[in-house]
Image (tube, rainbow, N blue to C red; front, side, top):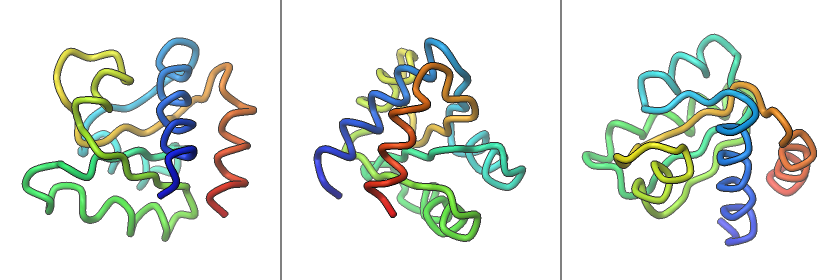
Length: 109
């Protein structure tokens, strides 16, 4: 995936953390996807074991929600504002990041 989209996704997570609402961790992300509340999914390529995040892109595609893979769960945890690495994050409320999310939607589609 293009570096630009990854950067935009990380910015969107940081903005949503500050002004909106995010769900952290694979279980919470899966619930947000199943309930239809997720607006954007970001997950880490280096999640171990890989099986814990394998279902996320499939579920996101099924629900029509953009799903972006980034390189590191440490980066994702930092963007989500937590001290530990996280395998996945869902933006539930984008807060002030509406325009940014729209830009990501257009680039992903």
